[in-house]
Amino acid sequence: MYREEEEFHTFRGYTQAQFERNKLSASMEDYLEMIYRLAEDEDFTRVNDVAGALNVQPPSVTRMIQRLAARDLLEYERYGVIVLTEEGREVGRYLLKRHNMLEEFFTRLGVQSRLLENVERIEHNLTPEAVNSLFMLVEFLRDNPQIQQLISDYQFERSASDESELTPGSGNSS
Image (cartoon, rainbow, N blue to C red):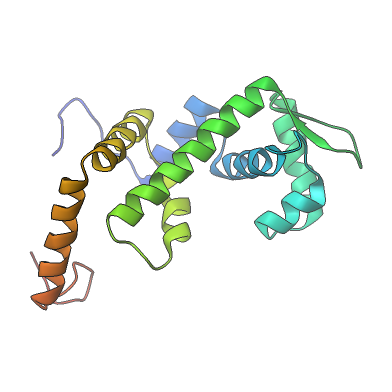
């Protein structure tokens, strides 16, 4: 449903606008979330740990932590440890919470294959309002297992009826 007060933009246009609001790119969010994960137990992490966890080269991590340090989200000295600032911990905690909520959301919907890929593709592209609404929906489903069962039953019935998936080229035009 389209509201007249909104304007359509390309995906890139929405992404640019979100970056201007948040000042963190999707890549910056990925690094900050991973640094938060890795530093949860010991309050610090190292470049090689981040590189290994994100499957990137250490020089890429170094460039990104310099950018994050310039935004006062972490502290880092060359060849030293990475320590999140209070703001960095707060943002990292939110990013991890958002990620975990989306994983739970997709799991509750029955998504099994490529779960992490789906979460990574969508998590940076939601507005705060959409994220808050999804948090409430996941909490509602958690608190109301009978609703979750209705969803599961419906999915089972749909899959048993041998209908085509709603994907391009599947022959289903509805």
